[in-house]
Image (cartoon, rainbow, N blue to C red):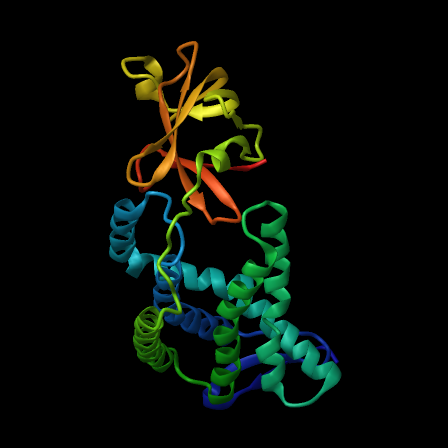
Length: 309
């Protein structure tokens, strides 16, 4: 029941074991090819999804960033494909083959369900770091792992040459991208992806305590006074901080007032010369409102978000 070398179709040599999960170099190549092929469609679906969410003032900057990523796509896609293959597809293949050997039955249901295993693991890691909600991360990572995992099983049965595999992956990538684009257009036209509209908050709804979960706090009172603890603010002009940092951290009292620029928000002015007047814009939703500032460059700036305490 150890390891043995067998000759597969087309002369492909693979290692096989009665009890040990294995993969060959061909499996890795297939996982990378299919993982890379699905990325353009995944990017289009992400763009459609984000069109229905708050961009936090990075609209134009985000477009420039997307154009830059498009320019780098020929270099980034293979690297991202390798990452998907190693972190999602190959662990899924191992899980599928283990399940098939121990429980039996057709192989394709195991290949279809197996991506949930590494997706759950990485989702738990991301959720523990506060980087991504578990359920959302699980859905996205599992979806990204399905096609490469199924692709490994499909290619293994056919023993395709690498050149034929990549040509088929390129054609499949084009088809997936067209389907994603058409689906996004239809979904937007049918109102399934509504355009984001920030909530309109009254003065009474703006008053209260707003926190970011990392120590920053802004207390807005009915009389127009404000109290800040560890609150980021725009650096004052003509100071060393203005050129050296995107924002300064201030603690103290001051005033606030509703103020509209490109969207509703509040203008906070703190006493003591720490920073300058800072516009906090309204975001989130009516039941979960937010106040936010995007400091620095829209493409690579620092986003700070306050939520009602």
